[in-house]
Length: 526
Ligand code: HAM
Image (cartoon, rainbow, N blue to C red):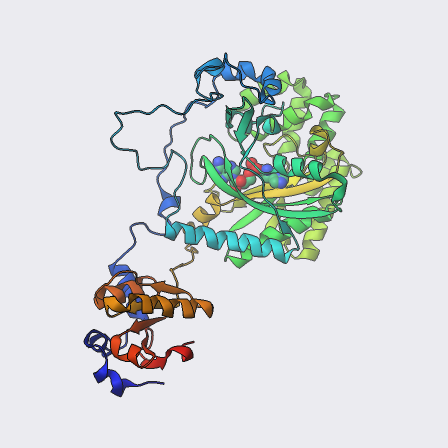
């Protein structure tokens, strides 16, 4: 019920402002730009990264103690011999509190190196990303799970010499347990599956979004903490599970505007390596180690790789053959080399055939050099990459049919992927696809008189009760300030509680995009 004529009897501050010309939507942008937020929406993600390669967090002393630490770690009994600098020379394991340093006057306001704060504009971007992760997972019928960020260190220690082990944030807690901040989610998933045991009905389709910690050399898109979206299928031995997973990532990419001309998946199978190693009678227990060595092919000089392979009991002929096979980029060529009968070829052919049915053929390509850097993969492995080759892997995953048994559970076929939050933001930035995410609130409610503060709070409660979001002005602010704030938070309308209207059981409303203004009875305020 527009009531421009009644403006004259309104509170003078309300009159002045309601009588202003409407503020067109475009002008709100001007407001926002005139009063910019201190960070751009990409600032945290684009913060320049140090190229220095810091010392690893694990001391030699620490490592030397590790083998005997797990039994001590399970003990909750207080050890009086354990003082503040016991064993490792660090304070971990101590039951005393951190020392109070009197001299500290100012704290470093930056978060620890390689970690991020998430002020609102960064949080909006993160929430948008996670919302898409969640919606895609749910679209594919996956249920969300989570685990503690702090896990038992033993969960992440594998023998194969993975880089991830050296990047572990690990310490002894006050109960002398060896613990670690999780560097990935898969071991926790395996732990939970074993813990739930027979109560789970297979197949399980679970997804998680969680923060992971790796003391990593920082490059573009690689940091010391990152969030990972994981989707895993437990209990399906067939390659259709891998196809379903890749299809879900493709669905995610399409949703956020990334096409197959921007990114692709390199796909192979660890069974390719297994078949080659079998030909050369390399012991099975060397398999994980060989995969980890091969994964470093692009980062480490070839001579070094060969040296490491020799130490993993491979002959020079086996090494040459292996390196040749790894350079193969087509399935037909691989078939020529390995023959048509092996499981590697069968799985890969099936995946490519399923890709056609799922409709993501143009996204995937065979590349025998993809082995991945985690020891537990046993079959198909894949990595998402940007076609311009500017960024590190966007995501990666594969089949890990034996991980559960390495933790003492029954072997259950499993596959999944991890997708980080950092590289994808870099890619969206590169392609100009970062969404514009502004704060959004439906109403801003303000009293025009200090005596009406509580009345305004009541109006806010009424609106919130009707499901409308309200930013209540909590102090007695000039209307100029209220309008600026309304523009900054993209409020749809301004609800003003002034004396004259309040006497009549009414409030003044201004629709900020159109300038429409009216008085409305409190019980008719929608
Ligand atoms: P991953 O390849 O180590 O696999 O990590 C998966 C993804 O996490 C990477 O492709 C990248 O997007 C992101 N990521 C990893 N490290 C960092 C880092 N330091 N900074 C920023 N992003 C990072 C795994 O973690 C497996 N657990 C994935 C998996 C799940 N396999 C089966 N299920």
